[in-house]
Length: 328
Image (cartoon, rainbow, N blue to C red):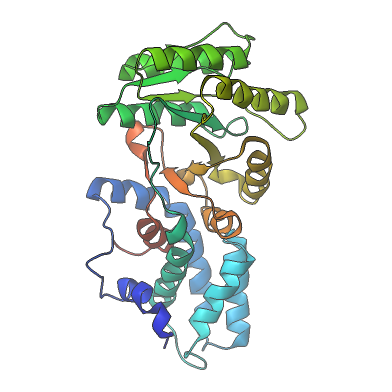
């Protein structure tokens, strides 16, 4: 059996769910489990293949560890999960559901400390959104605007991706849809100057939350990295505490490349939290575990689709059960 320290996690997955365990709202649980189905099916198939007609031995556990590494959970988590599965079960027939329960418990153990809500503790609360091209930054900003607006907060958006006319237009559409003010300039305009003017106006107009989009950046675009540093520097001239949050939007489909992105943007922009998108489009959702294990950054939201309802605050317990293929 598992050590006593494992009991609180394992009880949840072996049918004795604790009263304190968070429960997903039914509609969101359905979206989450469906969105993570590619990842859960890939992991489940690997577990079935490993355990088929074999008692648990060292070779079986090594195969299980390799399968979990291929699912992008990361070496540390995969090794720990395999060790936990083997504890007290050597030379025994082990069921797939039992392994899934251990898998979910260990995933939750990694993710629970970083599953933190985004705390809005300033006015205006300035959120700078960063990430590479195609990660879903602009769409995520629109979804956040919808959620904050539903909470009764006054939201303003800044179309800081001045390199793409489509990004400016997209943000204006989101703003019109959810009643958010949008600060924008023509394509090719000065993003840092726009940030300065928008933050000044937000302070004067008693805006609750100001969310700024930025151009997608890659490591080899040094001029864009310099612009990002300038945006932050200019914001601090208006409010020394701004930006209050720097959210890195990660595309789950990139797999292990997400680790390099977190490292890069953490160094350049001082990332304070993560949003992972497009979990519904990949079998590599386990990368969230590897990112959490390595960087320990708060994970605020995850996305499993295109609509505003497909972005929700992150719950370690719900994610762990969904990616392991367990029922709610």
